[in-house]
Image (cartoon, rainbow, N blue to C red; front, side, top):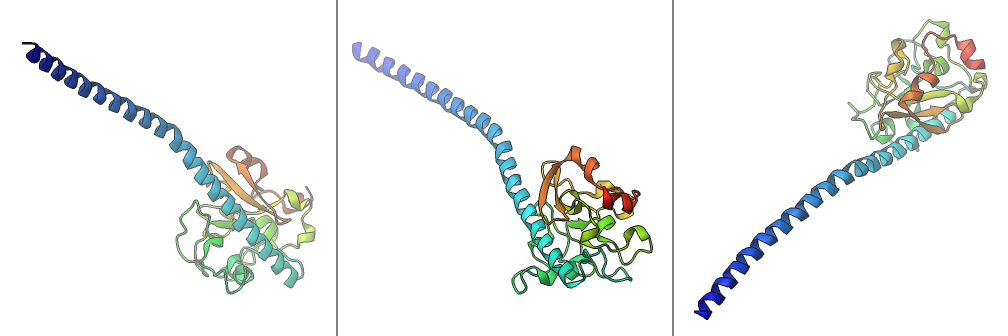
Length: 225
């Protein structure tokens, strides 16, 4: 009788222990799910921050290439299009200035890591960066506002954006057809800008409308602001 009672007690304890173990397991799983939901946004933000930094470095490289172009072409800023027929864009002129032999036209300097580049950059290619025509000029345009300008004509170059992340521009001009919305908000609803003095900087979405030069604003005002 005692043996039977003892065996019954042990079986009950084993069943209880199994149930308790299941509860423990479910508790641990719940904790893991909660922690994962908390950590994933932070991990995504960290990954995006890395891409933002890589993008800023690419813009700096483009700035160095632009400075090299200006040295060779009487201090003129590289224009958005470098031929009157509008078939050759600025990145064609700069491609061989980005460490010749190491950086090609189709490599990462022409594409923001947070955006998918549509094709290899060529005469008709689509990149993820674009220039500001107010400063860079455009040889395919008859508008005097887009006459190519020299670096010396840009007042306060450390505060003038000459290029940035872009969307829907064919990597051409951030003010193409007058849309400031063509500035690409690629990094946590912000963007990287390249300044006339060669440095790059990150801006939040709210800053976009304050600092991007409008298509309809006179070049004289912008150059002497």
